[in-house]
Image 1 (tube, rainbow, N blue to C red):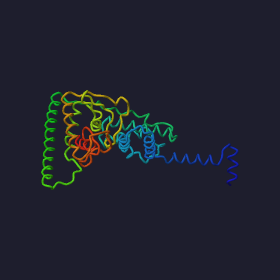
Image 2: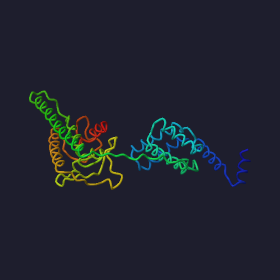
Image 3: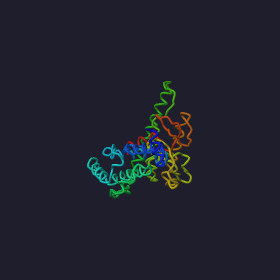
Length: 312
């Protein structure tokens, strides 16, 4: 039987291996569901390294809304009408904005395009679906009065943070004088001042939160009153460079901000010297851990970023 099949295939100019391979490919197409394709698409994006970890995770999270409805459906069976019904269901279930739906549509369209590249399907069903309209962005900035009020709060918070630090140091000196102080390996409370400085820098420069918390003293020129922005901290506390050269820039700071930063730099250096830590850069993935400095940043680094993120 096998010999007969091989003879018939030879007459057609085919081989048994090529037929078996074609059958495997056809089976793969039949079994390729949307969820499996999303996995392949996500893996390709990770290999390319063009997107941050947060962007990758957000993409999977958004597409999870679609997978709930179409995840187990074979790619070849998904059409434009099914996609439209899925969008309607997601809107009803999640009450998402037009901007969010537009983002989901873009991601899903990219997934289907990758499926075309891999020869799983021949046309993109999203190409025949009306793109959800994005909402008009309503961005608001602080008014002059709001900015002034925030600055007053920053000034008060800074005074309180320094006072609290002085009180802790006074208690420390008392324990040392009476021989009941433990060996010192940490400075507790220093990061509070750093968090206040982060707000001050952000208000004065308009820098992004991650850029502020990635700032190190080597990128602060107090004489020229400038700050060089060249890195940021992600929500997973990874220090990274900007995606493009346009993200690297130098911003000016005013006299008041420069004066407060100069005082903070001196105070930080004096406090760190108490635990034999030098005020040097560059920054590392961990800057402050449980009150102990491992390298120094302008604002307090990762620990401060986490605290500020949780309050934002």
